[in-house]
Length: 227
Image 1 (tube, rainbow, N blue to C red):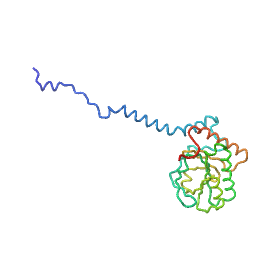
Image 2: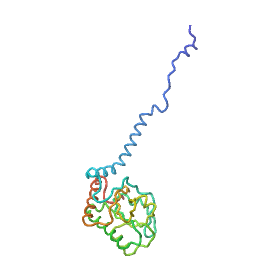
Image 3: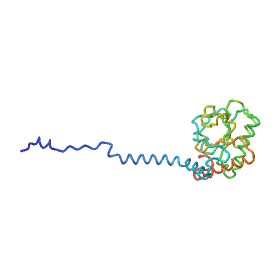
């Protein structure tokens, strides 16, 4: 005759569920949602770059150099001409044509700034999706008449230190940032360099490159910055 103690010893021992096992499906769904959000946030940039490469079979710009990988905008403060601070991120949400040069902008520099203005105007109805920017690389004084004229033409003039400039706007060995016009996408990524000097044929090809980028991003990029 078995005793109650023997019956207790004969009970089968099964492993208890671990506390996390019952939440595994919820964790998997949470991770999928996170991946979906990350993909959704990256989709505009991915689509615009894919369109640029796919629609142009040779995989390169007509006149400029693609910056690969694209360089993100640094989280730093720029300085307006009046000395007030401006977060560089305030320039996001628009395509940018960027010129880098000393504040003591002389003849060649002024011609290149005029080229930025002309490239923007050549875009016609799409020009309101593009801002033109002069990043001043030193503390040299800017000619008052030049500065006033550029602001009247809706240019952005700010000073930015060399470290931020070099990390954001790379150039090939032996070249200077003054040799290029940089194209920056609405998320702040420097993604193309155009030569700072054009003949008429080069200007036409640069215009086609810019129009191609604007068409590729038309589905998600609207004129102006969010209010």
